[in-house]
Image (cartoon, rainbow, N blue to C red; front, top):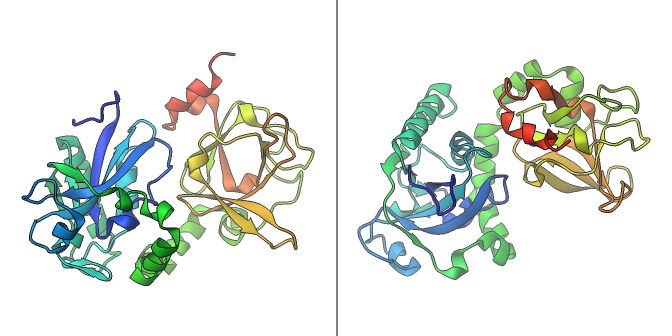
Length: 324
């Protein structure tokens, strides 16, 4: 297994069309240590952006991710990757045409190849796309970082990036193929009516009439939709609101903050970053020193008791209860 210089870290390399659009979806997730935009798969050394754009180098635009597989497994990177691309398009991606914009998964080990191939087969069998899945799985080779101006483009050129991303059609494509009526129907079957209304329609539970507002057991709370670990019972406190309250999340990267004006005043709403589920709100009236108060609906959470963490695949989080 090819590894980053830090013990235990691995590399994942994905080509998904314009590399400007392939950074933000992975960036700042737990276990993601770096994302580099660059060129790979071609026959020239140290190519430039202009050279790759001539379609004569054989290189793909790609991103290389250094990650901790214990915190964020390779399979989850693959899940995100498939939702960023049109895997049926062999001639480029969206508005960008040419071989340098083709899709490919460059694997760094036999283990990664097996997981990538299994993921590709599963996608093909799902019937989500009518065309053949043409994204190739190729051995990783030399990777050449792109020029500085192309690194973290979504941060350094925010206006240009947003304009480009909107015009590319990526978002519309993802909505069509990954948020289908069938997907919503399946979610309705998995969740209770209250869980669905809270997570999908932004409803809030009544105070004191919810499952976890006064929970005293030790364990972690995970996203009821996709299982991401969100909060630890060690960080739960009584805010006097009758709703679960926490001073901090387990991983900030699993949360997304959005402005919420529904109550007539500006508030900060909390959502699951990968699930898209509405969770609750962030206030700044919690205990010192940080004074953060994550107010979360019980219906958006599932509690995993401390003694069940290993059995349910959350064994890593037993360390949160060490040093009593």
